[in-house]
Every structure is written in C-alpha cells, then in structure tokens.
Image 1 (cartoon, one colour):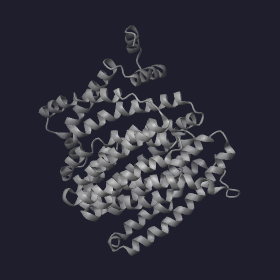
Image 2 (cartoon, rainbow, N blue to C red):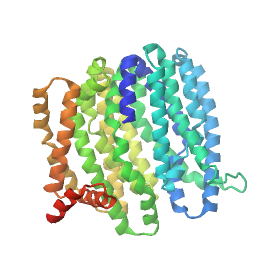
Image 3 (cartoon, helix red, strand yellow):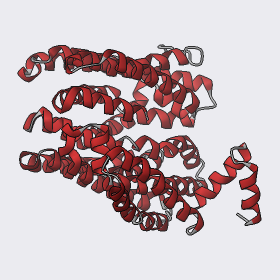
Image 4 (tube, rainbow, N blue to C red):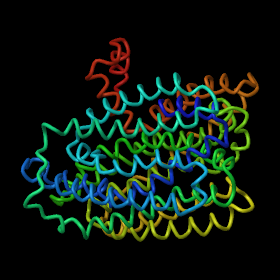
Length: 473
C-alpha cells in the first residue's frame, strides 16, 4: 500500500517529465549499487541458510561478505563520480546525481541477505513498515510542487538508507564482525557467477528505462515508469512466500530431501498462480482506471503501455520459482546465468529496435518478451537438473476463473464513469467471485490450508466455523 500511495502522490505533484527524470537517475545509481553488491544479496541468503545454527561460522561469513561488499562499494562510488563528470548529459542535474551517489557508497550496509537467511522476517517487516510510514509522512509534508524535485529525491534516498542503517543497528548484538583470519577467496567463484546473473537481470529489466531516457525523452520515461510501477508493485506480494521458503528449500536440497523440495515448490507455485493470475487479469482489464486514478490524466497515454506489461507480475513470479527458489539454492547459478544472458541480449536488441518508433510501448514489449524467454529457459534447466513436478492445472483453473472478470468490468463501467468508483466496486466483487469459485468449485488446496490456519488462530467467528464443519469443509 505504501508504494501505491507514495507513487500516486508524487506522480501527480511532479508530472510525467520531472517524475521520469528522478526515475532515470535512480535507475542509473542503482546500476552501480548492483555492481557493488557483486551477487551477495543472492549468495548470502544461501550461505547463511546452510550454517544458520553455527554462530562462529555465521560471524566469519558475514564479516567476509561485508568486507568484500565494502571494498566494492568504495570502488564503484569512485567510478560513479568519474562517470558524472565525464559524461556531459549528467552536468545539468549534477546535484541530483551526487545525491544518488549516497546509494552507491552505502551499498555494503544492505544486510537483508543475512536476515532472510536466518528467517528473521518479522524484523524485516517491522523495519520496512516503520521506514515507509516515516517516508510517507515526509513526502506529504515536504513535497508540494514541481519545484520540490530535490526534496522528493531526498525522501526517496532516505527511505533506502534508513533501511540499511537499521540493518546495521539490528546486527550489532548478534554478529561479531571481525576482519582477521578471513577466507575471502572462497566466495569469489560463486559470487562472480551470481554477479553476472544479477547484472544481466538488471540490464534486461531496467535497461528499458535507461534507453528510453537516452533515445526518447523524460516524458516517455515518466509514462513507462507509471505503467510498470503499478504492474510491478504487486511483485513483492507474489514472491513473498517464495522468499520465505528459500532457506527451507536450501536446507532440503542440502539433505537431498526431494519430497520436501517438491512440496515446498508446489506450495510456492500454487500461491503464485492463486494470486498472480487475477492480479495480471485485473491490471489488464482495469488499466485505464488504475492509471487515471493513481497518476492522473497527464499519464493517460500510459494506459496501453500498462496493458502490454500487465502479465509481468505473473511471469516474474514464476521465474522467481525456477531461478531463485530452485536453480540458485541447488548450486546451478551458472544455468540461471545463461537464461538471464539470453534475456539481456533479447531485451537490448528489442529496445533498440522498438523504442525509436514506439517509445514507452516498445520498451514494454521488449521487457515482456525478455521476461518470458528467461522464465522458459530457467524452467527448462530446473526441470532437467532437479526433476521436480509442478501442478500446472492450478494455473489453468486460475485463468479460466479470471474470464469472469470481463463481464464484471463491462457491468461496473455501465454503472459509473468515475475511475475510483469503478475500482472500488470491481476489485472486491471480482475477488469475491474469484475466491468463491477457487474454493467451492476447484477446491484450491491453499485456501483450505489458509482456512485451517485462520481457524486455529481464532480469526474466524464461531458461527462460520460451525457452519463449515457441518458441511464437512
């Protein structure tokens, strides 16, 4: 909800051009952050999950990875500064770019990988909610007009850096950082492979924004960002279960427990289908309502871009299963690297081919195509190497159910032309229809588990428990 609110407010206040400029600078800085990370955000989760019960090993591993990351962050920061003063394009907004440099120099302090590996998700949740709430208040108080561009970017930078500082504070009494008798070289082979994977993923997923900025204009970047921001804002929800399961999957792979691996992966896939399919359908059918109600009429030209990129949430969710939940925990990061390299090449080629004539629409086509190819290749390698089974019928059932959204969309629009009212009616009604059919007709197993969990927690009123027990549900 926080990204929805902040994005809606900022895009309306700043407009497409100014908002697009900030997004371009942010993406540019984050490329250097990505290089500075040298694959540690992925590698760290896997390594910590393996040794989570050995405090001495954990302290040594965290110290080694933090030292490596600190050196790379410093190196990339100097390269970032050099780039700013060599490329003439950056001189006009040098103040904003220098502010973005704070992200690069502080990249080493992003310790989310440690907390994920230790399955300390409550800590991450409380931290994120607190920082986002504070940033949202600052946004409403400090950003009032298009002239507050620098202030807005400062709030964005704060929301990222505050997370990093909180991470360091949280680890102070848990890990004893030490910088003697370290064996840094042992991490380098896997890290270099994962760095290549991370770079190629980032290139095919955000090179569109950079190429739009260079080949088109800031307005196109703003329109494209508006469309993708809304479509991708749901991705953290889709991969949430998978992120939680990665340490468990890693442990199951280590012990060669194929039954448990298959069980965990199917839970993740069932969750992705159950949530991802209706999200993608809804974003496509109600693209106009989402764009106009969230970003305003200045972004009306982004509607088609949003329709093109609507399936991204589901596709990226499935790709996350094949890549981050299977191939990397199993030690096949090089196979995933091949998949991402193909996606990167396809993305660059299609963006160069399409942006000149189609601008933000061309970038959306390129992004969607590259994500589909990466998912397909990663899926092929995962099936070939790990030999797991996925219940694809869950995906088919979800798609069939979502076709009922079409008459709902037409019916709601006949009732009201106001975009916000349409969404307020359509979203809960569509959700009610979808989950009712998934539960009653298709007997979705995840919904059954959710019901049992909620009942045990005392979240369901007794009258409903009695009724469902009598019906043997």
